[in-house]
Length: 607
Ligand code: G6P
Image (cartoon, helix red, strand yellow):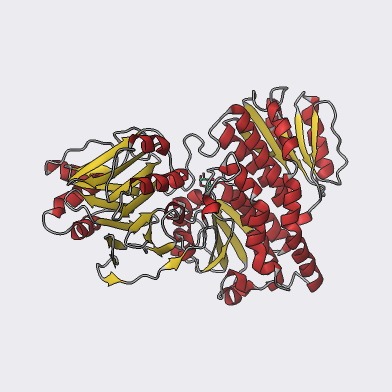
């Protein structure tokens, strides 16, 4: 979490820093700050509010080198005193994303040396450490020396008051990119922060330290050896990170789903058959040896895994377990070398998922596959196989298009596994490919329900709780709908498999408890209808997202929203969109900050 931007140029870089931070606010938004070197002094501006406020406060600040930060609080509450950059004796300034695990120890040592601490953060020790080494060497060497003392994860930017044309940056465990401009250089936590100035980017590797001037840069690896890293030209365009005609990023991203699905499925849909190679060249050798699948993920990505379990067991006939990444890594499990360990992550940098992946590898799992939206992310790099979802940048904190594209990727895994295991004949393969090709169009039609959904949202605005019901592979979709509603409208929402209703949650149902149900036309429909009657009989108001061919009709207390078409195995993907829209319109009614819900952040790089 936390976003970093830094710049060295021959012009005032404050607007670049502020614009970059605006792009990175999804990573954290409880305070922000920047520092520049101006006339031999560090000039720092911080704000306990949003980046826009920092922009106003720094309108008269200028400098040709500077670093900036938007924060998601870990150590120390959100306040101006804890906002980055942190400084040491008006000489060294640091911004940091990550966690320094041994900061208490270092703080005690530095305090004994006479350093004063003015914040509750772990970051301040980095500034003082660099300061303590600065007298003996350059900013580069002092930073390198300090880094050897740190335990934990970091991406940092460092500047010094007496060095108005130099920045040092480093990363280990947290992402950092180097942007290469003409006669100017930048660093940023992701590409969206740098697009305003350049498309040329170097992905810094684990342990890299880079010394940056306006005209040049030098990269050193963990051992201090100078290295060359490849420069890439980013394919991201500025439109993909602009709001355009939409009111919120979440709304934009919900509407981008047809295109995001088309992009994710492009290579497969253009071919005549499915091959393991879409997951990487080694998949041809690995997949035939796999006898079960373990999916590890957090939050929304975990819900995608839960849907995939139904697909993998039913279509591919392969046993599948899905675990919350943060739980898996701390329990004693029985490793099986024939397990394919699948991590799912939008960002590719979620600390819990990354740690679970490393735990799986350490216990003897060598078959690893990442389904991820960010190329070059840690999870991608550390997995043997990969499938990139091509959802484009997702900025709204509540995940939408990342989820449906993850589902599309997981369905491809299901089909390839089924084929490898001899459970997918040519006719069925062609039929599934046909359905996948149609998926973006089907999603577009579902989005046309938006006005009807906006209307029913009014029923939720004054409610404090909501129940979401689903059955089978739609139960995780109900769970995802409940998660969306609680994340952005702050209404307490829980999901249950509809059959569980009578075993407890029915006690909660009354006229103040709206019940949302996902009702595809599948083998469980009749059972679901009985569960819905149980709700109605207790005065509960029902909101049912029913398939085109289900014969459920609206009546007193039952609001039916008819889906345009029935999609068989792909139905969970399509049933997701109305629930996203429902959460969105309820949040609008409640006037919450849709894209930046309180206390949350998009990529959670701490445990
Ligand atoms: C955070 C986000 C969620 C996301 C989860 C996992 O909690 O707010 O929206 O689902 O992290 O993130 P990942 O990037 O690993 O999918």
